[in-house]
Length: 106
Image 1 (tube, rainbow, N blue to C red):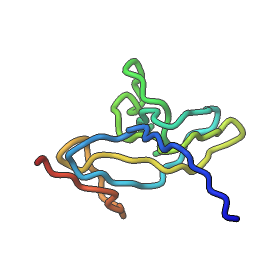
Image 2: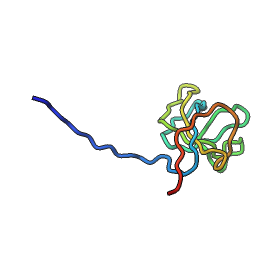
Image 3: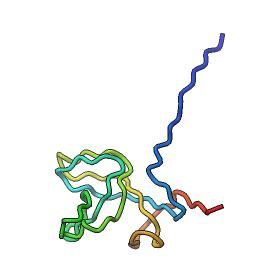
């Protein structure tokens, strides 16, 4: 006899936008344990990413990306996935980027 089971899918709506969403790998600076959805800023001197705080003055005060997965970098720098809006939204830097989705208003 066949056995069936079901599960409920609950979307978390991390990204909701009508703009083009891009993804890329970033390096999280060591000493941080960040959760998915954390807003990241890029440290100008190193090019690495930290939690974006308005009181910072190292370049990371400018929001640049959203962390796509929980990332523990307490033991050293760690590469992680991030998402960002296209040049119509947040600042856009050149590089290889993969389009995740593009929605248009109905």
